[in-house]
Length: 381
Image (cartoon, rainbow, N blue to C red):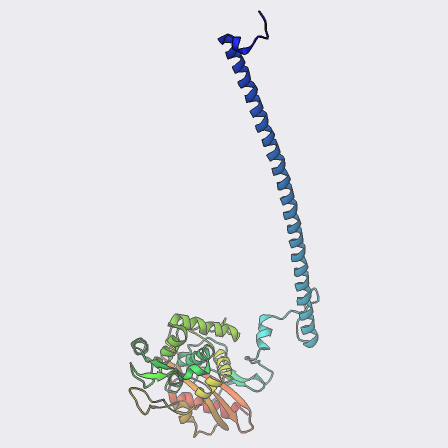
């Protein structure tokens, strides 16, 4: 039988074997094509991975080098600044590597709002009742005399000096003439705590400026509360601002406030020195100086008082006829049971020298004034 006869002459068995062989060959071809594609993809993938890895490695190295270069420059700059400070100030201590390094205490002592003891600093004693006192020469920033001047005290309403200082630093002068309605919350908070009142009434529309004066002159707890709410929204947020200002003044470790009024709280404390520093800063602020220096103030007309009301700084009015060898230019008093009668004031003597005095834990408000008169007259020379 001829092997090469036409396929049409094939038997069924021959056709099946042929088809089976063709399918096998086709399958092998498909597998080979797939294998080729996979191999090509693997090769291309490997090439891309290698290229990306090399690129990232280059970027990392460049970034690392740039970071090291920046750190070196910062270190060099820092070293130059410290060295320059050391050259300018021979009192700056030097570390073992030769670079200048000031302690926090030294930095605070050199700050604008601070004072140092000297060999001439006297111990305040004599005809006074106050358990705490500090007298600072504001011109030389030297402590003239002290009595437990850095001991912890309850600041009572002397707190309000920090209240208006904090408020003044968070508003613009234009806002002083904005109208504010004295809220029930402010009145109730002051009344519940036993605080003094400003003379304004709940629902009265007064200016922010009135709140400043109402806080200091009659020591209005309602005005202080409303002022704090106006600035920060709530009392806790405002207390945080007060404590931030303490840090800025370098007294954050020894003074802490929990409210703007001066109500007693075990976490509401200060020292005579710190209160004097706060007064020092406040009298450098235009808004605060104007308020603290005022003896009598006529508030702006309101919906309740069309002619306004008259409020006074009783400390300044009661001490103005006393012989202290100078003139009181600003003052704020305070009292709670835990603090006794206390006050912080500023005086300019006849020679033109300015002093700041803080006293605390006196027996009465009048005795507090007598203590301040005695200290100014005998130590502010």
